[in-house]
Each structure stands twice: as structure tokens, then as C-alpha cells.
Length: 246
Image 1 (cartoon, rainbow, N blue to C red):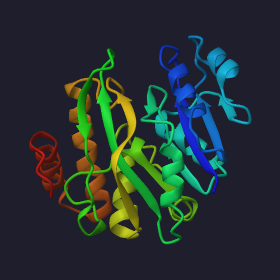
Image 2 (image 1 turned 180 degrees about the horizontal axis):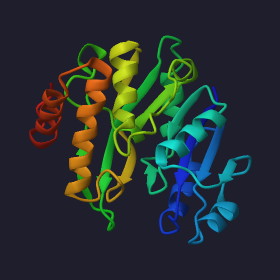
Image 3 (image 1 turned 120 degrees about the vertical axis):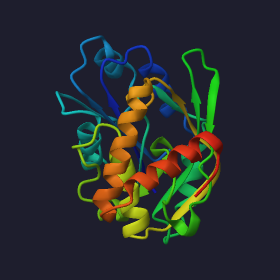
Image 4 (image 1 turned 90 degrees about the vertical axis):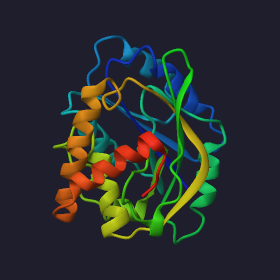
């Protein structure tokens, strides 16, 4: 099975090389790297051109934000399995994509997900996001960290669009609510870190980023289910602070 990894980049010359190296170090061979650059001006594009893997897809043009860029990447991806590796993130170890492909050997599996380690600029682990199995396969009080989420081609064809570009932070949550709760897709949880994520991006930059994320989470829940978004956000915050799972 072919695995496509999508990376959206914009002025990230400090971190993109490690991201590219993480991809090329994967032991699995049937891979495709789709890189969507938002017309970077800081030297990122030069690094991409010099260090991207052979056969990778690279497009550099203005976009309307990260979810717009990711949608472009999903449209170009040709893999049976598709995941995301952000420009400042790395795979936890070289065997990750091989292990993901094994999990998808079951034809009933629609998506595979796991945990992430969140690190600061010094490389120190500041949080271990242990996703855990979804209760009855549904999202009720937390969500899957999307850098550790891989979707089957069949599931992607049921998502239109892949991401709602009217969101800045929580389009990934809306996507998950749709495929887990509405489409009732079949997921497999790998109880291990899959990605090491650098904090300080759009969703983790500061308190106001978290506040926007909570507001958009409430909106996503209400758009999918009609009501109950405030209660969902309360459960989500409690889950993050205390580790209580709902």
C-alpha cells in the first residue's frame, strides 16, 4: 500500500530540514511526499528544492491558510493511506509508516491514530498527548491529535471537503466529528507516540490561540450536531487539564 504524507510550509526554514529528514528516514518504501508551500520568502523553498525526497510533489503558490494548503495536498495525494507531517514536526521513529501500513492491512480499517509528544524549542517534552481508544469509536469529550492521524483513501472519498477552510484552528476537529460520529468510520488506536510535535504553532502559540480553538471547537460541534458545543468544550478542557476522559 502506498502512503502519502502531506506537508504544508510557509517561511519555516528553521525547522523544515528536520521534517524532510524525518520523512526520508522512514523504513517503509512505498511513500509519496506532497509538499504545499505558501510562496515562502525566507529561504524555505530553496531548502525544499535541495532536500526533498526523489519523486516528491512540490507546489509553491499563495494560499488561504493551512487548511486550504492541506486540501490542495489531499487532492494531489495518490496514496491508499494519507497523513500529515507539519513543517515543524517529525516522525517519532523510522518505523512509524511501516507500522501504520500494517494496521491498514485489515480492509475494514478506515483510519489509524496514536499519540504525540509535544516539545519546546529546546527539544524538551512538555506534554505527552495519550489519545486512548475512543469510547464506542465516537468523539465525545476530546479529539485525536491530527498529526498522529492517518486516513484511508476510501474514507477520504467520503469527506467533502477534507477540511472546512472557514476555520483557522479546529477544522481537524470538525472532520473527526464527521467521520467518527456521523459516518461511524472504523478506527484503530496504536498506543504509542507517532509524532514529535513542536509547540508554538497556530493552535499552541499562546492563551489566545487556545481561546480561539475552544470557540471554534464549540462551533464545530454545533455545526455537526446542532447544539451541545459548550458542554463538549468543557469536557475537552477538563480532559486536557486533569486527564479525565469522557
